[in-house]
Length: 175
Ligand SMILES: [Zn+2]
Image (cartoon, rainbow, N blue to C red; front, side):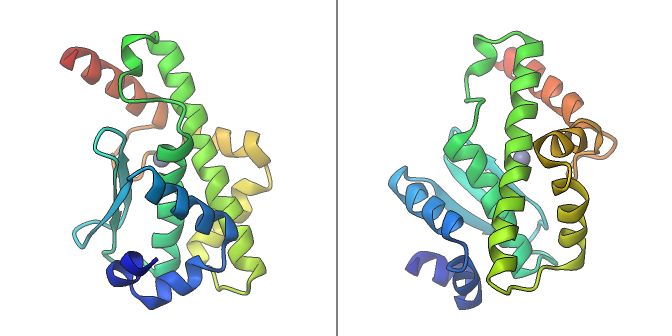
């Protein structure tokens, strides 16, 4: 936690400590040698399973949003269903399906962490609260529907199924 405190500040770590699930994930993250980087250029976040680095954007991103993004990317790296070289063994269809399931799990995880933060009295930014209320009510299935039709936030005019199909093609070209 000391390192995270240096990177993200005391407020971030104080909020993180209010979520037992996320605190447990951070322990596991250290054990597996996953590192976190911050970027002032982005508002969003992403993870790379080959380098085991999670990048969290801090541009216009509130502390709670960064925390939720960290929870999302940790779900990918700690319990992800699609690994770096999966395109070699999986058909395009299986790869896309598995990626969609993984993405859904990440949004479910976001909702679980928000549950814990809300229970601990943390104020959640409005847009996140809306996302939470809109999708979590539908449970896993509702969230899966969102993942199927929503645009990917960092790629204009692209849905998740399109994004994963693109990734599959790109990885297959790299061999
Ligand atoms: Zn994701």
